Amino acid sequence: MSAASPGRTGALPHLVVMGVSGTGKTSVASLLAERLGLVFIEGDALHPRANVAKMSAGQPLTDDDRAPWLAALAAEVRRHEAGGAATVLTCSALRRRYRDALRAGDAPGTRVFVHLEAPAALLRERMEQREHFMPASLLDSQLATLEPLGADEAGLRVDVSAPLAVVVDRVVEALVAGRPGAGPPAGEPLVGPGR
View: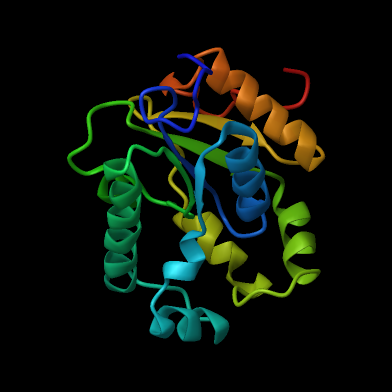
């Protein structure tokens, strides 16, 4: 995978920065977009108002709630792709079927999922210290819903306990080295402390 002209779809795939709330998806994705010359798409900004209201009230979303949101995210990525730009999108993408909806009709490897992970205690602490419509009370629901990347899904898993700049460096190194591919090993981060 070439690092040349990273804003073009032929140089880097579209990235989806995924994970439960509190992992720093927006911070990681926006810095990745800046470093790699990608178009940044904040997935939360495309949630219907009803979804935001439901989450703000501490109610988990259903698959029916998520379906139009996932369709809007996929359409936004395709809009940029049609203009020749690669993107980095934030989306929790907790279940395999949600990720399938985001990559529906794409050639293999068109979307690479960057799965951000951290211990639950750290995530809860981060959520309690920020202003966001997603309350910390929904973390357990998200962790229970999460389905890790499958062996056939292009992606990498990243431990986000490290400082933001270190996390982004590790993701960029993996992308430039062409390491994302089918099958981050189950139960062990592909990119994390000591790697």
